[in-house]
Image 1: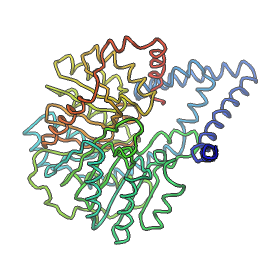
Image 2: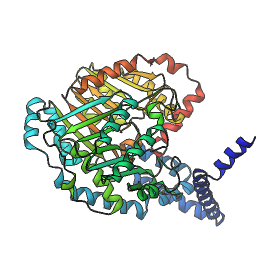
Image 3: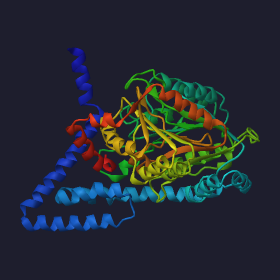
Length: 513
């Protein structure tokens, strides 16, 4: 009884509970305001209805994703009073505009640091016109060059990556940059924190940035201050505040670790024990990552500094963070292009890379994703690939971390199966975000197949072409299939009418969830 009371007290007075209460209070205040407007007479209702229709027309004509438009247009027409007020509050805020301007300015200023090697482009063009065109796009519109003299090591689970990262962190002599969505106390973070504190004491430039929402309820209050007091430079990206604000949608979902400019890590693995299966939340947690060495590491170094300077409003001397071994992977085969994706510009880099890979697959297209909520463009591309004879397979979680995401995914299963796409559910939770085609191209990163990853979050990934790592990614996919069950049209037919209805409604509002 005492233990139960203690847990209840902790929950009631926790930071998360306070935030939820304050957010609900704001929603009730908005609702009360709307009710108050109605009391002034029918003319207020008609005025707000007309305003809602005008906003709906404005949204329809905006250059935005159709699914996002639909998610707003429907409530604006169905419940104009509440939806109109909510839209005006959430989409016209100074903080969002200020953040966009700051980040775009920083990316523009750092552009000269990310120069595309013309020699690398010419070598790539000799091997593949498709890869060459993608490299040109990533350079001109994404801002990240495609590199030679780089190697990639693939990790098929969290523990393997964790052990390799600890080994590299211990070697740090100049600097350690870490940028993660989730940092949580436990075995994994405890080991890494110990190394970071030791390296900071040795004079190494140690920097950590974590997302204000992803780690909101996982770390002690003012944990960033505690680390700074011990020598680790620490920033919280977009601290989550209990305010209804559109900028709260833009989270830093990246996972980046750079050591001395010589080695970098990225992928789906955050700094928490479930990622190394020391804590079981949804069965076995399947995740992946890559370790990059050579010229391509510079992309990650600048990517981190762009975000760090945006948040800190400080400037760095980039030459201090050049790799210490410039000939580390000279002559390595293939091409590597680490790239980032920002929600604050008009370029959907993550989506474009995925579309390019799907559209040019010849033999197979294998995908792993925790959230299968594709937009119309991705569904159309998958349809063309499957109908043209490409073996298209997708693995999603059998034990999801978010029930509503799985419900929405099921609403796509029938459509994709009828198009010829094969779908499997992993016997556990799969958090890996992998694309691999034809043993030639692969992407491992943080970008899910849902609206948030493709349009709202800061993301990153590594594109590989003929590095030799692509075959390793494919073999891991095939091994994962052995622990997955295939979904059939018969499975879709077994769903209840209620489940189908819930999926249909959630699918309509997926961009706002």
